[in-house]
Image (cartoon, rainbow, N blue to C red; front, side):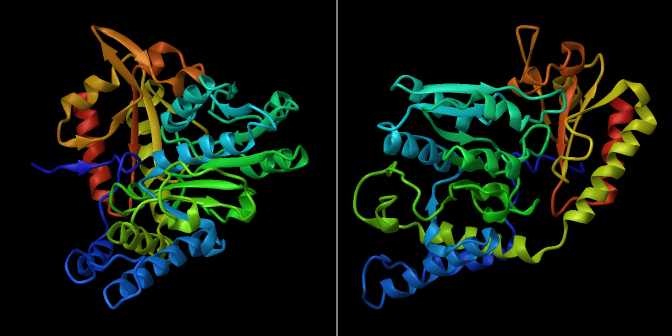
Length: 372
């Protein structure tokens, strides 16, 4: 049975080049990089080369990058670290209603410790209005956190405009860029961010590794305390194996010019859906300002979960959950005020580096056979 993977936003395969560069660190280079003898020096060198590779993709200084265990840790470190460093100055955080749980839940935690959090809404296409961000600012606001691109519908947020607002009010600005790295330009100075989160497994690197960009001079407390690793910003013996994998993945992302091909393939998929299903299929998210690989569509009057269950050889995601016969839309679709009859039929197809046109044609055939 042919199987097709269209869930790259959930996790990517590890690129073969990444696998190869990691292999020596499973057997040969086992030294602790904090040591200065023959076993530790090669490990330290590889670790710093990986940091350079990440920094190169972000166009920042290498010392502004720290390695983490993934996007969730990076987000937690950014939010909790800034709050703990600046809570004497203020306790107000601004974010949006469509953030990943790795932002929403740390904010809920911080509320238990004195933080006030404002969740700004979005329009019907999932895009936040920078004016709404500015209206939410108070004299106690210390941090704004807005994702670069939404993981469900792919809508890209106006980070540069929000950055100008943050700078005008002397407020730190963080962005969760887990979904956008390798798909969109992520030069930190152009985005105007002070902190930016990266997740390796969205970028053809292994799970369990990520990074956090921290602009030089940004006040932040460590999330993990211990010895003085990462210039005292993140304790714990360095994971050379995974850092090397992330570094190579970032190098590949900078070298690959696949975005246009994937975007064209995604548009081809959308045209095929419209041609067959006509008004029975609806696009969720912005028609143009969205990730080039992401196609979130609703099959009106149907259940997204039922559609995917009827095609077990197809890997994709739904935008709603079914509990005891009741449909619960995702917080993202709710924030976009998608009608329940539309939202319950949502399916997110996310393409990637290894997706082919033949796979899209086969997926269209399966959907035509199963949906109506």
